[in-house]
Image (cartoon, rainbow, N blue to C red; front, top):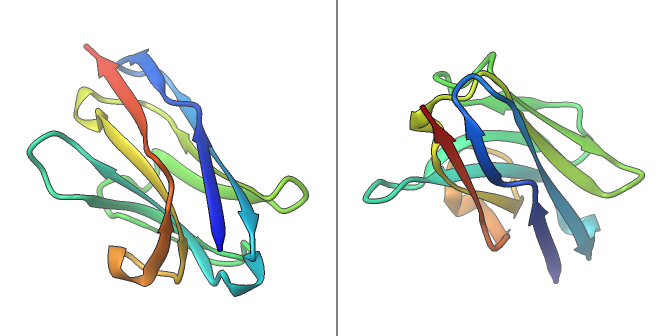
Length: 121
């Protein structure tokens, strides 16, 4: 069993920055990687970024590379998503996921509750 607790969502102006956090607990020895996904109203869930549990490998959606950064703090068992130069189209519910490693939601067995990010223009 893996538990994910997310925080850091909120309302920001276009061009601003926000950092999302995902605290991980439980049987973490089974986790191969962590991912961030987002889902806007009336749209499919979209891959954002992923990181291996060790933190040695990362992968990003092409459209977000350079603006978003995924990282983790092993001492705190926390995964972060740093979001810079935010745009209104980044508005979505952001989800943290644990399990495998990759861009497909199917490789992740555990999901957080989601946190709302709203970017105003």
